[in-house]
Length: 199
Image (cartoon, rainbow, N blue to C red):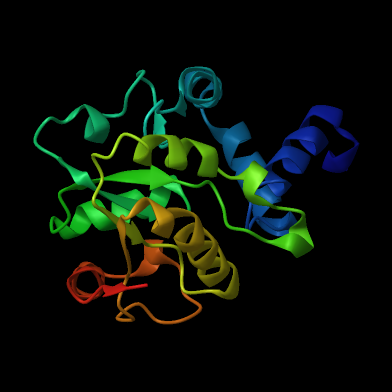
């Protein structure tokens, strides 16, 4: 049986570790890879290795990039007085699709979650506070997901930032509670941006 083949079993095991991939899907992916020409499999492996080695956090916004500073932070036409705080790099893609937001971003890489042992030190909060210290930013938009953890994170950040005299807004609830921003359509996100409220 194929499961006695150690390299195949390991390939299935590695696919199974990916989010939302169960055993059957992992098996299908592994067998698919094995049916591909050797060059395609090698290109796939090279893409994985290159991505892991070359992609890192932008030194300004903490988004993913293969340069020192990501293209959004490097864009001199962006409004540097407004920072939109998001949970994950993929949330930035959702906002950029709207073509409505012209400010800059800050990626937290998660939310506060005491049950999962995720506190302020596990997020990119120190980096955000350092960016706000020079007085350039006049508004921080809290664009964490409308979940319990997202709300708790927005509330925590609001308490840290308010003494700095910076306006803090929250996305309006055009975004359904319990959903992820990456799945929101452009119109919903644009309306949420327009209708943001002070915290």
